[in-house]
Length: 285
Image (cartoon, rainbow, N blue to C red; front, side, top):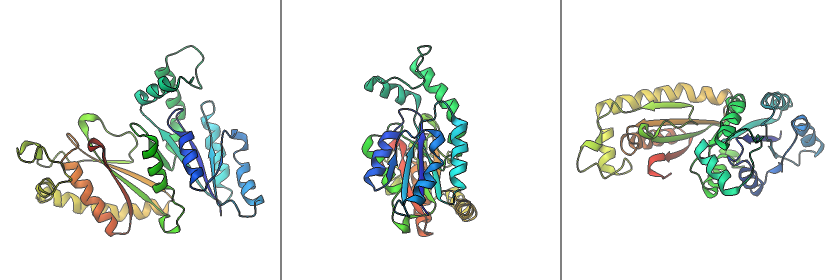
């Protein structure tokens, strides 16, 4: 069985960089493939006699989002392991990237601003994003960070197969991440920000972590989170979900959410799950 990864997403969000990085990892990459030829990739895999174990298809779908969904459905009927990777990014970041590269947006017909074109494309691609197995938001991400994330997500090692979990802390002041599957709000916990000696620290540091985790409410919340995870995660994996993103937010994203995410990640790893941790407001993984 061949691994087939369809790489798509918003123009400027990193499709080409993702393809280059996956090619470096040993994937056979086919770029700019017309939608009508996407189902033929399964035939290519069989003709090669099993020599192509990992095939990546880079598809731009600005003009036919429905067609891509149909093409992927055909691919999945081939019996191969088919996943859809969607690259996303905030409009502000995309506008900046277009200004730096001076490239034209593929929807540019001279009738709108670049931000309007991006939002139009975002709306068109919403059905594709909803169908994606993995969504990577490249907002604020450089090419080296994208490469690292792709290497972790698409390692060819057999022991790395199965559901991958991305945990991120964030601050509601800066907005809820747009690429998370589930969000938990821990603003009900006492805030270390109001403790003078804890305010300059973060949830990565022991005094703050102890302050947050020793609270009875935090303990009860985590125990219920563990119980829910015991129910949901095997079910997601059984349904073939490859990637699950969970966000935990507090007010500023520096204290409570960080401590909770770290503790949750520790528990998940003890249960054998593969976890990647990001603390958005700390700019650290």
